[in-house]
Image 1 (cartoon, rainbow, N blue to C red):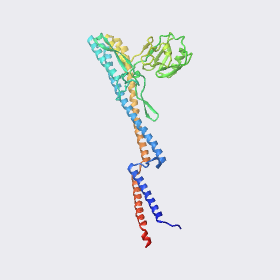
Image 2 (cartoon, rainbow, N blue to C red; image 1 turned 180 degrees about the vertical axis):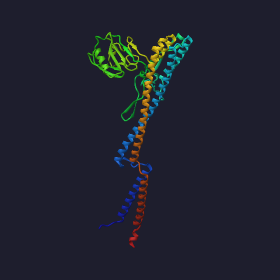
Image 3 (cartoon, rainbow, N blue to C red; image 1 turned 90 degrees about the vertical axis):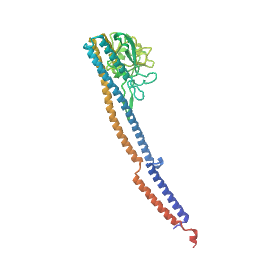
Image 4 (cartoon, rainbow, N blue to C red; image 1 turned 135 degrees about the vertical axis):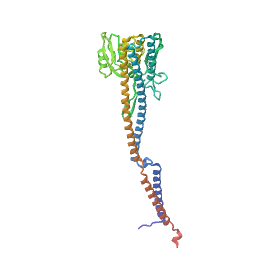
Length: 420
């Protein structure tokens, strides 16, 4: 049996009252914030899980933003390509009419040339379209800057034929072959752009060197880059080995050797070929494929090389010139065929854009579902059950009131009460 003093009773009562206040403070804070854990020390395991769920939620929100941006970019690309299709359909009508001799008078030929010139201007304007941030839709990576504002630069010349005045005689592509990609899910990337070197091209391109490479061999380890793919060329590799390496690289380019032991490279799908020597390499310069004074693409082909292939602008310009000359045979044969090839390539990229839009819609639905799921798990992990928490608060409050009442009666006697 041990003696219980007034001080012991007072200390016990004070300790219990402080404990009640601490519990009421925790309950009040939970009700005010809606969260179970206030600081990591309250529940280290729950805190770790909450951080993981919050990180995942932030990732999903970023994917949703990327998907929204991609959707907007693809919608603008789709709209631009559809406008081009309508222009090409009109140009095709003019070509068919010209092939059938409808434009019998010079005035009508002049009128057709005037309309084609306007359609050509619109094609270039659409090709230079930009999204809301100023990024070119068809220019790859390096466009939209002060130094390189537009990927397609028209070239004008005064034409007396048909009284055309200053008319477009060519269009130079100054963009690059870069494709914009966005991460639309964890580890899942999507290409959302169509560079102009592909979308605005109509025929396969052929670059023929006029250099006799029968005695050529590489004198060192070098690299060449074709359509963005690097190929390693070892010391002693001759033209035949180089051709084999190009053909085995999985490119949309086929290489062959001409009758003069010269290198011939041809695309297997319509696009502008991208050729460059990497670093200090000289192979493509040495065999006469690219210009030693301008080694960076585009438009870096050697002056001595023969370059064949048509962009959609080249075809329209050619059709216009043949209409002005009244050459019905060329208009109805070669020109009409090329117009159809250009239209086919635009439709191909339009179909690819549509397919990407469908995929984006599916990704958006999946990401929204993921966001809902992660948010629900996070809410269960860090959120409180308000009904249960209010009941706990009321219970602690009642206990605290009882403790105050009992304590008041316990410490009420004074020293005078004991001396009676």
